[in-house]
Amino acid sequence: MAANLRLIETNWNAMLPYLHGEKCAGCECLQGALIELRLELEDLPETAERERLLSAVRHAMNVRSPHACRGCEPCNPGNILADFYRAQQAAEAAAPSECCDT
Image 1 (tube, rainbow, N blue to C red):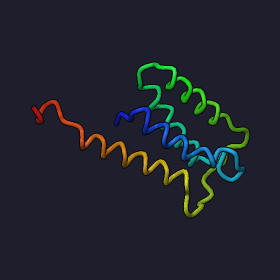
Image 2: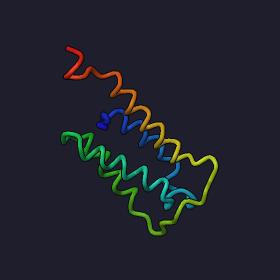
Image 3: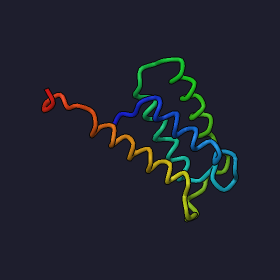
């Protein structure tokens, strides 16, 4: 699933509040979401905006005290990642297919 830069930036901005709290910053849920954003960014063509976001995401992934999921309900970073996946799927479903939509 390919994401566009706008979708990635929207989700990055949604994750920003969780990057500084001890509870979430090192959590595998947030770190997993950041990995997904990083991978999507790495698949995009190089632009100044892509590089800015990629640098910020990589910086956020450098935590001193990573920890396993503590089972928070709700898991806001996990919910943000799920929303990211849903938006990607919706965009793909809406995009014309080369084989069938000619």
